[in-house]
Length: 290
Image 1 (cartoon, one colour):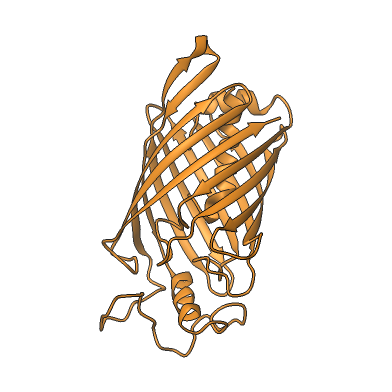
Image 2 (tube, one colour; image 1 turned 90 degrees about the horizontal axis):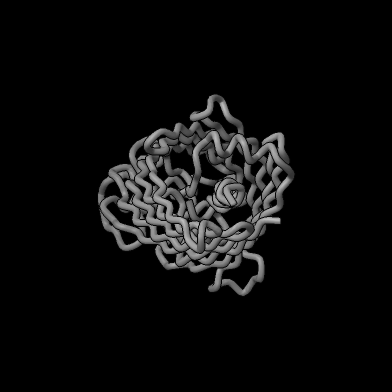
């Protein structure tokens, strides 16, 4: 049963392109990942694009399908396809992730991964100009699970992100122990740059000129976020606080499947384009492990 919680983390990592953990102790993870190769398939519905707490001006509900293979050595390969309900295309985007999860001590774990995403021309995704994502994370679990993640997103222009999170899992045994109901609240702070947002605004104002041609800076005029009038020039290369995040996931887990509903609230920080805005995201997901 605990294996499904572990695979859930890697599936969530693959869908981080849209929607950014439920976990047992690191020692339990170390015991279970050595057993056998596992295959997990997942379906996820989301109310909008979530990219480090930021989102597009118009809501973009989506459906994501994921498959993850993990071998006992800790290496995993994940493939995800996305469909936007507002898109006439069946496949609005896709991604492939190759990663490696490992244990340093019984309570300290690490994970490194690389994701490449495929976007069609004039994609409405906020992060479409940065199809590559290299990530590294360290997690320490005692009373709380504390994790520090570092991401490098690159394509037309590079962006850097760091996320510090604290979470706590509360578990209840159901049906005589054959099922687990879990509530895992998480608080996270994300800092980073946002040249991807500059390119997104340029493409929004001048379709076809901001993506896919290496012209991430447009005509040199700094675009302003939709609906905002300001004389202040935004420095998209500046590293700073992007969002304060509260995630409230509730999951039901049995031997081979897991169902989760999660609400995430993101208050945009001083370095975000639309600082002070509160974004909300709801996801409903189901996972099945073979």
